[in-house]
Image (cartoon, rainbow, N blue to C red; front, side, top):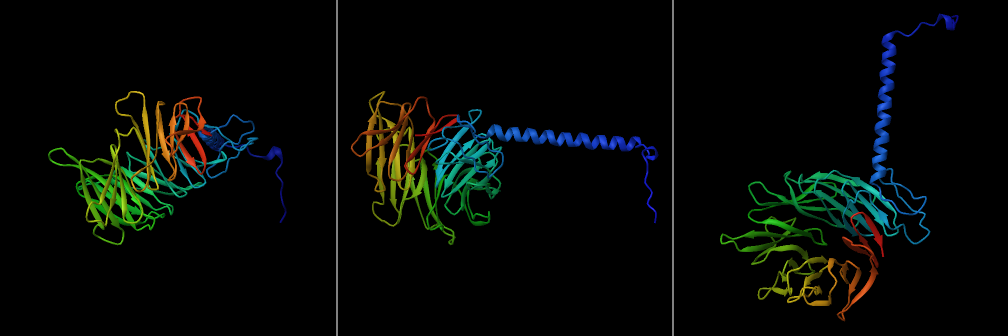
Length: 397
């Protein structure tokens, strides 16, 4: 079979339909390219930056970003748009929540972007190496580790989430608004499978906790009697049992945080006192530590609570008290500096003021950890390192 070549003079011109088709394909390709450029620019704008030269910018989820810091870290990290909402510590670093993303930041200043979000009212909880981010308005939540998003889900009944907790295995405990009942407690594994569900008929769950054995659950729920008196009801549940393991009603209280305190003990932290409860004791099961005044700031971790309040009878003196597992004051101090936040890591208590970060010592004094040049919003401890932040920058002491 003879092959015939077509010369240039013999080629047929393209008809108008084919010309229009190629033009449309070209326009579509240009549009896609423009969208990709816009998305890349947006991804870069949400990534934190440092004042150092030759810094790396986050361009893809899960990529580790490191700095040519010339020092021990890549701090400070600045987030565009004044967008830092919360920072919480985990093993090996901390999660930093901004208005449109969740970053994992190592103690050296390297960071990843495990999640871009569009939550209207995001709330961050951490446990082990995991971060749980949920939206109070929609009931949506996302579980992340340092590298990527592990799971996305919604509350069991699709209702708004009141509060939640996550443990070191990535198991999630969610308290959401109920339908014909006040609250719904749901326990999910790391794959999003429902392990346990329990309805709270009359009270609104305000705090939840997961025990180390991963089978026992604790919740504190607030209600009001017909005469208007507030009360808090605590429930100890087990995922293998239908009935409650233990429950009690505490009148005249409005709990804000509950926790397992080891053995048979549980904790309830309120605005004006801290209650240690022995769930097995039949006589005098409650040990009460009443604050000198209502807490301005409060933080609980591993059975320890640190509280900052204004000293009674003064206008410019504040008391900082740390309560141990026995509900006795382990350390306390006074200061005329205005408290901005408190933090405890289970062994030590810290205070953030408008001038610096201080450790509360047992001898009644404050030891300076670092000084500050501007007003900060909060701080966390990771190991022995202190990290503090304002509305757009995360610092290392």
